[in-house]
Image (tube, rainbow, N blue to C red; front, side, top):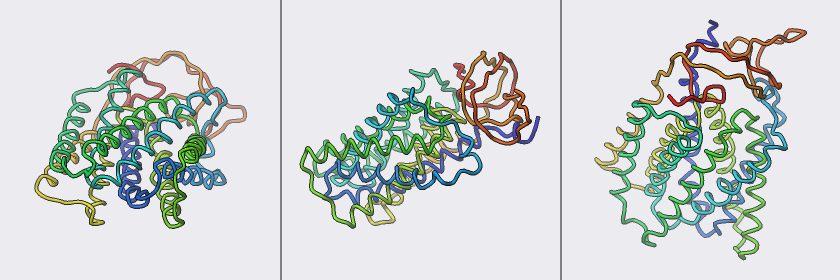
Length: 355
């Protein structure tokens, strides 16, 4: 087995999920800052216009893994539209409305429910396994979020409406994560570009019909930049993580994002920290550790399948022949024969068993 094959995809996927979480988490208080006084759909349009621009800017960088990914096919258009509606229109609009009306720490931590909902949806729709270690991680992260939410439960000046709007955003992104799962092996730039462009166009149309005010140049620039990093680059990295460890595990590790958002908000003077914050931080850290150190390996069978995605010929799963020979990562339609073997793995598109 080569060194590339021997490396556990769980560790690499967990690192990518953490990076995606960091990019999104840090962006949360900036969404609150720049969307204050801006219509929610106008803010959503600018956030995902920034994401689309980030994806478009990277189209010229055709080296390495990006050049090898499978393109987005016309057959996936319906799914992309559904993803854009859930994750690039409804979710950001709810967040842009709710965050300015509540404390940034509370709003950030409420988004931890996205991970819980993603794991549940991944189990329901894809039968992704939830073992004792993953369950323990979810409990630890959930308890950490609950402690902090209970501490700041009365912060919102609009009562339950603002927190409920943030929770609706979490539900929208959980549905987005679940719908995006079959697109994990498609070029992430194409997915982000299509999702961002569609979401921005739809949100802009709603904002125009609703008569929302035009944001200032400062707010528009801030939302575009925040969207480029927190929604564009973050989603690309998130899809790469899903490719390795599945929707449920990626979503659960992504639960660290709200905590990072809360810390960033506190550093920006829009939050508070006390003993309960420290306890919650420890619980979230335990949950993330359980995921990063998870070892999932057993004898499992692959059924015969044909699909297209980026792959290598030294990963133990792709042994077809090219004439002339081809080395490195590349993408094309290929067929897998049925096989049974043992190695570390996550619930990706090649391995969708229930344990």
